[in-house]
Length: 157
Image (cartoon, rainbow, N blue to C red; front, side, top):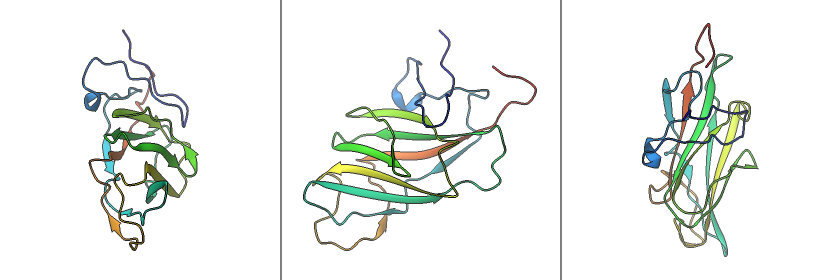
């Protein structure tokens, strides 16, 4: 069985490997990422709200990103309370409950980007009324990172 290829920006990558979800790799011209960029640190801690908690992470597009290369947003969700994930205001599809997902976001990223993790209130957030500050996204919520895939010169898969 052939693994599926990365699709256009914002389209989920279908992962068909028979391994635990954290071992799955998206496949394109080069099946191994040449670089991983952790987005785990630097999140704005939520102050809490009546119905949901929102963690916010701002980040820049990698500088001098070569044409033909791909950026894949990887998210390993742990929390069943994760309701939605937004990248620059657009929903990133994630299945309910614990899962590992990969999305080609090459065309979706701007010079400056914002990722939001929405949780049901009381799960993974700060107490209501608390001031916002920067902290790592709790591993009990999710792991988040970008992977860079280099295009293979002189051929296609």
